[in-house]
Image: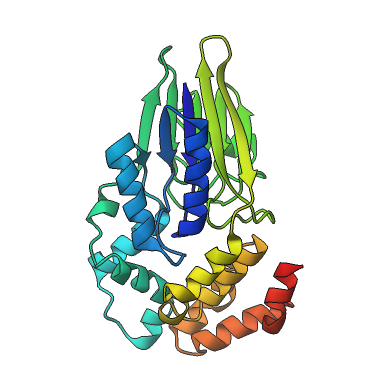
Length: 291
């Protein structure tokens, strides 16, 4: 049996299509997504449509990620708020609008799924960990903590969220983080996914697949889709994440989110300060990336 596991597409249609082409050539029995199909990227409606097409025609399955939750929250809590309150989630509000304010497909995604091999062993799928979609499994996660994040322990657990691919064995559980299709955070800008196999002779096995794709077109989509214009200043940081394969929004939030929410600093200024403090001249982004 062959399972392809994809993670954290983040509305990158170019990367998603490249991975689908690779997956199709591998001919898996089942394709599984670990969530974050939409948000934090320029083509949310197209990526959701593509998943739903494959879901209908080939039985693809997914679970809900924290970014699906963020978009759902716009429908639940409303996106009409003060300028300061709307500035931080502006890109998520933009995603909500791109989806036609219809989050029913996102709400239908479950927290976890389980499949069984012929020997009865379980392959479990969830976004972050069994502790929640925002509590992830990292390369530096200790075995002690890892045990608490996968309880009750299956034969295989497949996760995403951290954008850092890994394969770990803890006790009798194979832990697979599929990494990120659209925004890797491990310094490697290539896209990729996980290939998992089961056989009666070898049991469960996993490997990570990484390959180059048209990342320049993925970046051009930010402007062509209206994401740069409609998503607000934080989209500039998502651009840097794409170009450098490194997380930016997390550190920005620690430094500036409260100040922005309180209206003590504009979003544009907070983003400029974050970039400056990280030692990156905005005018050198393209040169650094192309080198």
